[in-house]
Length: 288
Image 1 (spheres, rainbow, N blue to C red):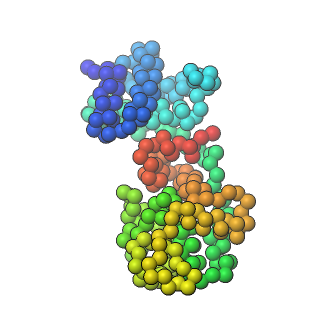
Image 2: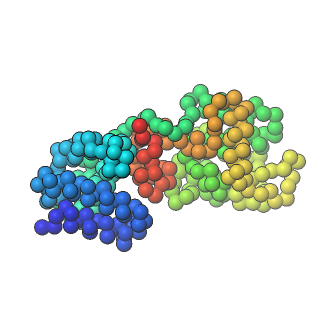
Image 3: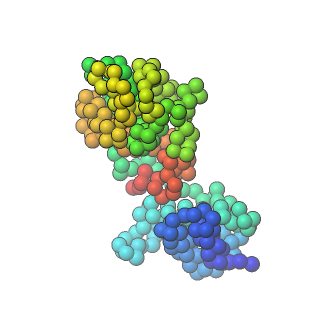
């Protein structure tokens, strides 16, 4: 029967050749899984069938005690989580290959709401959303800018993704955005302000959703907003709302992620909703 260590090699080859993961990702998985294999071997565990919930629990306790070979300090929680993610994906591979072992669902990852990233509290969001109405300007700009703020907050889209949105990406009847290789559900508020903006926007010779209308509102072919333009819009209304924090589109993306964590969403779902290709990118929201 194939050993844990042999099957790790098979799993890594599958990652590289079939799933087309980057060399860096494969190397990281190699490091994390060989560490598990080495630990398991010392515990006389070489058969994948012997990986149990109790074994994983003992492994987690061991990870919490060991020191990093580089920094000579205990492993950070996010580093420990990387190890567990690698183990869980390895077990998913065994499950796919119909090799008896622990179900990957039995490997639980920590759920934390504490974070180092900057995000906005509910009162700050409310003040930010109210800012476009406070500025004396055409209703078209009020609706466009409020729609931008709503989208950044309720979808977690990157500023570049928002700038690239086209009219064809929207399905307002279903309340969806079909973009960035994923389906995104809109909140009622986001849907409302998008409808308002499109009503004022009317038919313009530009398929991009958010465009830079001139002050007279009669440009023949206004250009699409750039990511930098969207950043300036967010900054402008943060100043109008008198928010002390530095507020950027990334801040609203962080806020979206934190809200998902507070609701108890699983890390895999958060990864998908944020559009990350690897789960490690999501772990910054879980750091101590």
